[in-house]
Image (cartoon, rainbow, N blue to C red; front, top):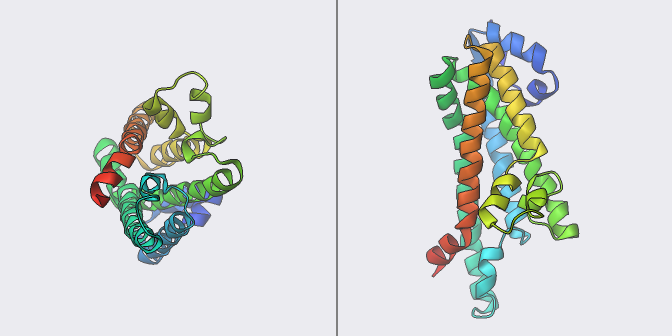
Length: 224
């Protein structure tokens, strides 16, 4: 049986698509979906960065550089962000399935298909940050859709706020979707799937918080 990759249909019709995916022996149209999502990723990150959102690490140089020099640095900053976007995309779509393949003894190719839908959800989440940043002046980690804004009322520790800011309604959906999909595709016990998915996502949220905590320092070192 052949399964046709469609990350949108997998989102809206998860049960039917998972049945087809589990029964499939061959997967087609994967690379078409892969490169479409990669293109949308680059386009989204380019639009967000070039509009000035997320360029706070560059603000310290505004008064010391001419307009042309600042725009040049902004271009390098854009390339850096696009490189990060590409690495994140590859990490979510290709590396995370490797972890789940080891943990749950499930088909790597099938998990990659699951992760295409996961990344589509994460990409949409990034689009929701734009109106919050523009109209409310809120950084993504204190989005009303994340737990960062709640954490900010209880602590001033930046890493803690960043960590809880990484946990949003979208991320909770991603965890639920991964558990549902992997439990369906894998022969592993559900408690082990739940434990493995939760632990891996906790590691990712902690790593995201750490990268954000040192983000400005890293940018200053690269542009100095």
